Length: 236
Image 1 (tube, rainbow, N blue to C red):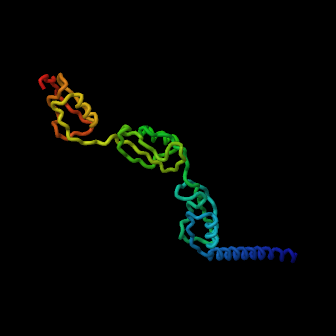
Image 2: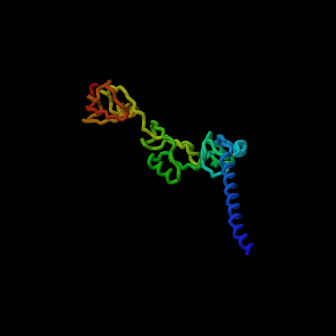
Image 3: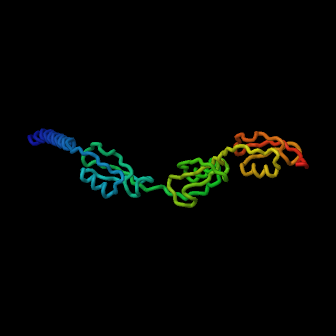
């Protein structure tokens, strides 16, 4: 009977001892973690994995590769991004996640020369490409709004930096209008053709009687010259 009574009193005592020990262990663990050393995260971008791992080890931190991404400015295999910015304070033994560079994205460029700009952009979208820069230039041979040239050339291996030259059409040249009065129509057309001027005649004959604009007026490439014609005087 006495033994049973002693056993009954001993069980709560043992339970209390385990409870005290558990609380003490938890408290000590909390204190140890609370007083872990705080360190500064080093800069890792553009480092090799070997150098980054060494820098983190010196700071008491760990490295984990989170993934890869394309980037033309960071060499393949080097660190492109880190999840915690450099200079931030973290607890020692923290894991720093990084993303590695896969280098520039490489494509095979289609031929778009002489295509309209809108059509060229549509072709690029279908291939997952985009035009990086558009430069407008004058061209005497390519219609306005069409592609004059592309860089890189077709079928070259290229990066995201695709440049196209788009035609503004020919330069608008200005001239002093020649004096065509009393000139033969054939000679007039030869002159105006060189100046990219167009001729409209009125009346019969092959000799210019009057003209509009007047001689010496400013005319621009592509404008119209109006001529009143007369018959050639056999006495001239």
